[in-house]
Length: 415
Image (cartoon, rainbow, N blue to C red; front, top):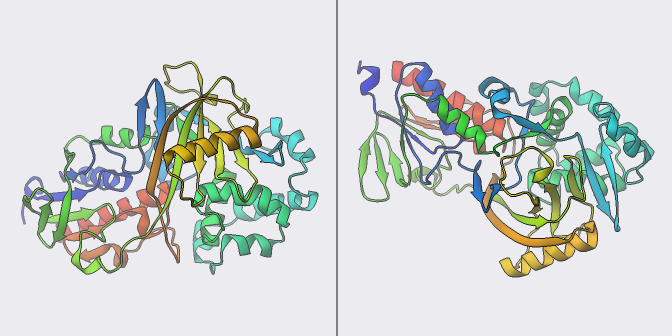
């Protein structure tokens, strides 16, 4: 058998899945090379430093209850900044806070007195919290699927609660406005929020993949290198070079790389995130703001300066997420967002900072699973797939798929 150090093992994609694959291979004595099209690790999990601000590529958070995150991340080193378990709801030029007053006493009074949901809805939220806390992840992902919208209706939530809270909150997570996402994903995400916290590293979301990269000691990186196609034993690069490979793990969308998958192209959900400077914060606590207006472009807002960060600028920075489909080019979109911020939230913008148009923000998936299976990731004995697009669109799924891909690759390398 070829010695471990002479095996040509390539991982395509330096996102979370690819980094986990490399980490698991190193634990077992194998050295791999990661081929990455961009100039840094992270995939869809990136942060720029721009004009003194940390700008994440899209509004992203880490849910601290993710089982895989607890296994692979050092939360203390990430200096996680927690969000409060609630949201500010903007509707009809008014705002109020709805949150988990049992976990954060500061939110209790406003939650009890808010009229954005009915008293019956508040009781049902407590019931749902209790049910999902006691429900296993296996139970969640084995239950028959329906849409999130139908699930909420079946549970008995009022139209008021759905429109004012569930629709804007989960539209921002699922990146679609009709709540057509699987009820399995709703239960999973709701459980993760209920048993942990949403948080961001002090250095931005990119601190997560950077921490994984820093754990790698013998992995080689080929940045700014695009792969054209993959076949058994060979990787063809876009510049014409060909690499011989004993094992190839494709930790990215494989539909354009494998000839037998080009007819089943992966579809994606998109969004835009815009950053603005403001003179002051209208939401002083680390809470997300939701627009309960079915026709607004803005889905959610968050003052990134409401949590500790490494910004060098002392002004306030507001993140705005747009999920709804539109045909506005950047100039008109910025203008409309500024108008909505003023009209619906009472926020005056000092200036526009930067926009991220993210065409591949989340994979569009049906029949969601908690984690992929060996059958779904093993193309053959030397080509393995990884990525959250194989099971469900989440950071947790990205890590689990990378873990399984490494396990299958090791089995084949050692056989």
